[in-house]
Image (cartoon, rainbow over all chains, first blue to last red; front, side, top):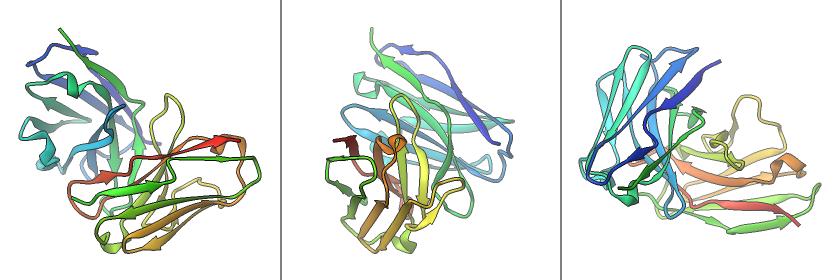
Length: 116
Length: 108
């Protein structure tokens, strides 16, 4: 059984960098797509991007080059730079298998608030 | 990007009734790479259907996905208490992946 757990600060100041980590257990991190998704009341569910096989990444253009997703061992991470209040959301990590089949495993999510 | 529009926004039904949820795309979803998710309060989304019509592991057969191209439907044949939640469709055919705005299924 694959298990994902998000971790990171719950409060980030405007203009700073939001950094989150997703720890994966029970499955291989090397052969799947690993995504970040966020959910805010104003914008619903928004896909942020994914990483595949440690180096192939794909990001949502709406984030205008502010995002980086990386992998290290059994964790993958999200960096979102120059945050504003609009980046306040619950952030989820999730897995997609290589044969595209939707996001089948999700973390429970972590709330990040952007505020001074 | 592919915009997904779900309808209705809210659906009020009773246990045992049938629910029909719609998801319409502004362009064709290649390979019918469309998924449906269920989200309860304070929970992450749970994958129900992928490839428009294939049930994910452990999903009861009362959940039925159908459709192709730009029009997709999730049917819940006989509503049970645990089915009252918010449902989202998502396309993963073209980047960026996008979600619909959701349909809230509430108890009448």
